[in-house]
Image (cartoon, rainbow, N blue to C red; front, side, top):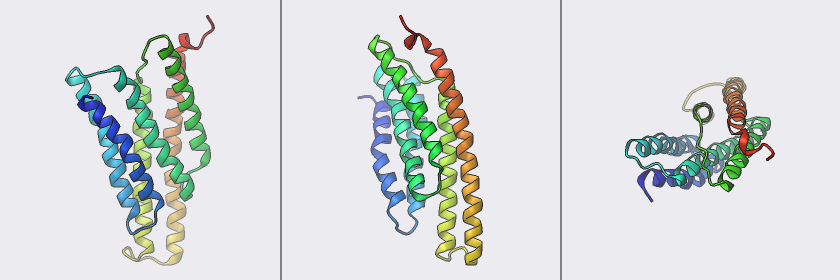
Length: 197
């Protein structure tokens, strides 16, 4: 297994640690989750660049890289739903798009072809990562308020939680719009695999 593919596998391996940091309540757990998510996101940035610059692009990498992205992002979104900081509709739309795209990839694979992600898919992933990082930061700030590191009255914390929730939702909905756009473009560009013979 070459270096880019190892980085892709590392992204998948980091997901359970991110989930644990998000869902287990311990001091600064959102900061730890952010660090793990950030490390995983960096592997996404480097694996493709290394693969292209060193001529190490493989069919395994074309298939596993977007899969690793989906596992990372959807895991974070599902944890956000459980934590009450993400609308479940966002996750449903995201899952619908990902299942549709994955179905096309499987159809293409059945014909011996590997369909790589397009630029819109990469834009979708970047906006999702930015939104998730933003929510991690906002939740960490709320935690600092709750433990008194940032001195603020109880009413102020409630107001901050409401404002931060709205900011997070806006960021996630922006990424969801790109999710829909990229999905539609992907299905259209690869319609030959889903059209009747």
